[in-house]
Length: 152
Image (cartoon, rainbow, N blue to C red; front, top):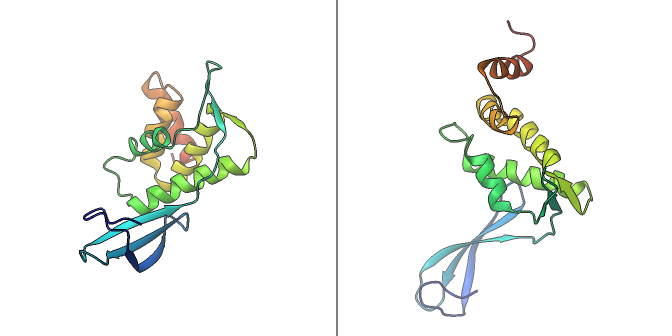
């Protein structure tokens, strides 16, 4: 690993920890030349299935697109970065475990919604309102009623 400060090739690992529910290894490193410290993350590279859009167009899986679609409804919610990363890891794991080469965006959306529902009700409703294209306040009421079926 080259030092990002002086580009020296000799660095040593000071500390290693699992991150993102074990999906990443976080390594704290020190440069042998300039003594600067920096952090690296190590992840397994896996092949994700392609996504079949509702229009029929097939796109490669895009982690950044998934991340953006999840982080938007989570804005200003009391959810830690570790919880967000864990949720993204679980979503990707569920998609990979399907064993398909192509997955519809509808299936991916439902997986995202189920993960959001367990994490944060407000974020779930925010995502659902866009994903299910709510047209009026009644759609919001219905979705909230589905979250809390025992409350009036």
